[in-house]
Length: 249
Image 1 (tube, helix red, strand yellow):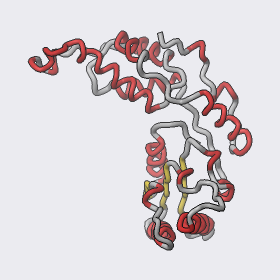
Image 2 (cartoon, helix red, strand yellow):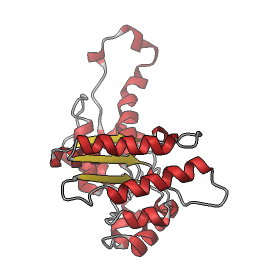
Image 3 (tube, one colour):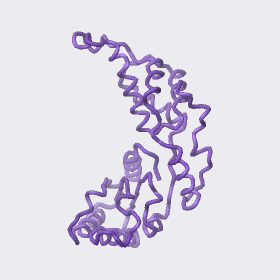
Image 4 (tube, helix red, strand yellow):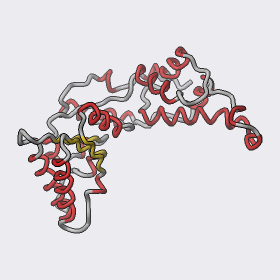
């Protein structure tokens, strides 16, 4: 279970550390309205993975692929899900097979029960903490002219409790636009070097418009699901941001 943002990069990191072939698959690439086509695509995917093993099959938004089955579900979708689950059962059963299926979702409660059982490790990856947000800011600002020192970056990180990785990216983009907007119409006649560096005040302005995109109700759902099905427990302090630290002032 991942929070919003940067899930594919985690999958790539896993493959890189394992020295494995990385397959980044979307649900739409496996589905088809024609009966039989979805199963063929799934079989082809696992077949190619076996020839390129060790392999990692990473599926983002896996809930859209393996959502809970229902009586009114299209026959093609139902058969494709069944084939995928059968292929998952087969992957790794032989000592010669080295295929790992990794799924990411921010709606784990919508997964089919049979699919949930096959993902034997169910990990909750929380929103970035203050240290992680500081590291994200440092990395995102690395290619931009700015005047934020380590203390200023830590201050911005403290004011962005509850932000996802994608939120931090949007925040930096908004802060970078503040000096540009100050130039108004003169922007067309000056060079890029004339734009002043990004300052901490620009982030103060940016946090007023770029807010956390993760609702408290979502965190409630993650906590409940993790308590019921997670491989490792997560405390409320790990999931819920401290509202007193996030002033957005």
